[in-house]
Amino acid sequence: MISNSEKERYKNIVDKASPKSNVLSDCLKAFWVGGSICVMGQLISNYLKSLGLDKGTASLYTSSAIILLTVILTSFGFFEQIAKYAGAGTSVPITGFANSVCASALEFKKEGIVLGMAAKMFVLAGPVIVYSTVSSVIVGVIYYIYKYTSFAK
Amino acid sequence: MEYLKAFLVGGCICVIGQILIDKTKLTPARILVMFVVAGCILGGLGVYGKLVDFAGAGATVPLPGFGNLVAEGVKKEIDEKGISGILTGGIKAAAGGITAAILFSFIAALIAQPKSKSNM
Image (cartoon, rainbow over all chains, first blue to last red; front, side):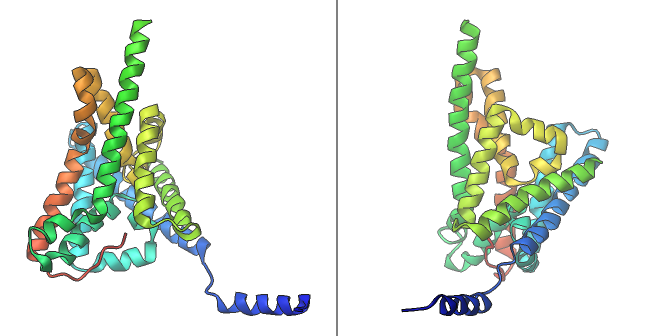
């Protein structure tokens, strides 16, 4: 029989030995880095709009600029260090998507530039593209039906 | 004010991702897919568009913004071209971002030596 006090002691030992999951500090890091990336996006976008570009074009160039920056940082190995610190702060913004494409391309370059680099580019970005395409079609079908039926009324 | 809104909303979306990473056993790739699909559904319902109006880049830069972009794209294309828009609208709206990611990564991979692994 194990007494309750022994169970208690065991639990204390386990608690001490297991690594602290610093969810709060992880979240704070993700919050400020992720928020800052968005502020950077807003700055670029406002600057482009001040040049007279329309909203859609400004937004496209903003994403492209962030993607380019991510690719440069990934190529020099800096992105990995930022991502280690920021967690979801860098993987949830478009930087995560760009990093996954670029890092996979670099990593698999040694397997050739066709079946290595070009194919493996989409190891992680592929699912994102597949699921967004499929869900866009579902949204489209529902929207079309909704539109058609509301016109028929 | 605009920047503060972008910071707060963008930061909060990342925190949701961080909580999912820390508290569930979902892989980061699955979480990103969930974010994109969620963005697409909310975009289809027109809810995400309101968040974009409020937070600007705070809502468009995180991945749900990508889902919203394809949802908005497919709706716009259906309005303009009819039923064929169902097939073309989504990818068309995302084309710029996807092409930029492919092109820049392609050039980088040709020039740079591998140093970094993917962080997803």
